[in-house]
Amino acid sequence: QVQLVESGGGLVQAGDSLRLSCTISGLTSNRYAMGWFRQAPGKEREFVATIAWSSDRTYYADSVKGRFLISRDNTKNTVYLQMNSLKPEDTAVYYCAYRRSPLTATTLSAYNGWGQGTQVTVSS
Image (cartoon, rainbow, N blue to C red; front, side, top):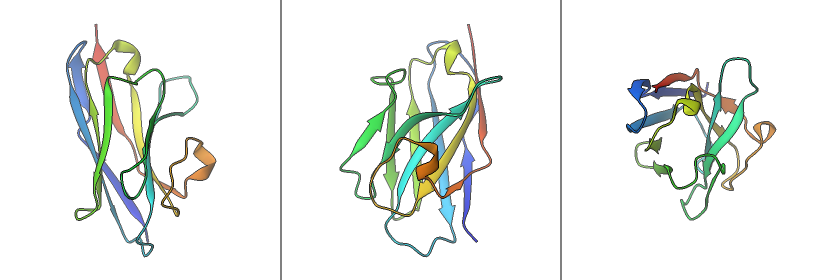
């Protein structure tokens, strides 16, 4: 059974930084892309960032471009989301997801499994 476990969320002030981590286990496929999504109260889940298996491709939502950085360590089966210059509008539950393909994707339906989410709250 595939499991994704996120960590690193919390309550911070505007302008602060946080680093989220997501560790995946139980995946038999050895080449998989990863993504981060978020869902704010009353809103739909939205794409944040994605990274290819080989880390040679990354994509970001316009709202986080230049502030967030996605990376991965395949030796640790872990993907990271470094979030800098956080804004109150970044407040959401952040989810990591995997897809059974080494290529990136920005749509929810392209992903095969999800973590339980970690809360990020940014106060003004």
